[in-house]
Length: 99
Image (cartoon, rainbow, N blue to C red; front, top):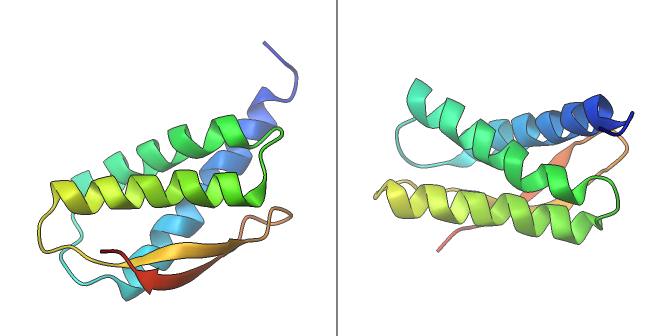
């Protein structure tokens, strides 16, 4: 395993947590602990492969795909999508709500 793996995991988790928190600040629908854990895990899994060399756009696309799937599985849940990412600290900006 590569030496940077813990750092990559940590970065993916930080971005995933920031996406999730930003999403729920603006989402319409109910948040449940089970949804939170599942969504965080899926966000981290989707984002992680893009961390070592992926562009911010690839990370944003991966995160938004998870949010799209979350809403498909939870009718009535709607929220914003990631529109910008600061790779240096993992902060995100949210834009237009999902379809």
